[in-house]
Image (cartoon, rainbow, N blue to C red; front, side):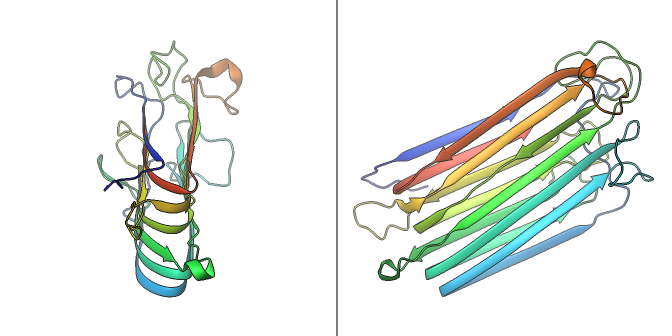
Length: 280
């Protein structure tokens, strides 16, 4: 990203949460949910240029159970069953300004190979508001992944916080959330989301990744800073249990709990780049 010569505020954040345990195939806790059918894909592309008003609204929910005879409305999970629920949301608006907008979105609810994504979203948004009319972009983006799995096998001492000992599958449940929000009167921005949570390979790493990069359009000869606000948010709350099958994930089986919450927020003139990744 190009940096302005006179910079009133620069925030550079790189946050990587990589929670890895070396385990055998028989000692798996957090794991992808296996789809019971082939690729099932929703994809879209929006490429727009507008002077005046522009609006995009996109909401998506995708829930998946690994049990071919399971039900998403049933609770608790069956022994060995795992679920992955995706929720994505976007709002965008361009008011009294010029918007140059590009979005590529895809959601594959089938099994993907390691290194590929179930959810993938990429944005390029440039906006210049009309100062005489208080032009404002506004922008929201949010992606949430909920994962849960029931245990299978006899209880053994866990090998580490994120793996179970003995034979069988460990239990877990957790929510990973990313974010955004902009407002802004001038911005040149790039955002991307990638996530894998549905695969036949139970050893494939479950992950959610997010990047946010925003600066200005260099309309002011003194700097190339964005004008107007920004906020980036992420949250991880993961509970790990041993491999005793328990209908309610009660406290005696809890072997690990990890929680991480972050937020970066700027106002006025800014240049912000942040990266978040959760992998287990």
